[in-house]
Image (cartoon, rainbow, N blue to C red; front, side, top):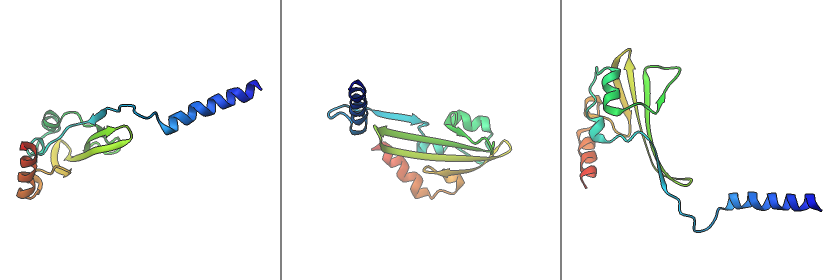
Length: 125
């Protein structure tokens, strides 16, 4: 009888975790590096790793197998829901910046001028 009650209690407690409590407030959680088009536009070909780190900050992910690639990821969540996710990848040739790709590509690395202008307008509004 006692084992049955313990098993029932464990089942009820674990069920509450799966369903969730109604009316519980969940805050927005921001993780990673905040990168905007304005910040990305400061990147120029040939910059050193130190200069890039000064502009963008410490990368969230430094690839263990490729020391010449840094990934900057920003995620905003509310509970399990992803509200926003932005990525920026910078690549180097030894200590020289050779490529930028992701959500914010600078004009110096082939982004269309219209894309850079719309990114600045979105921030202003």
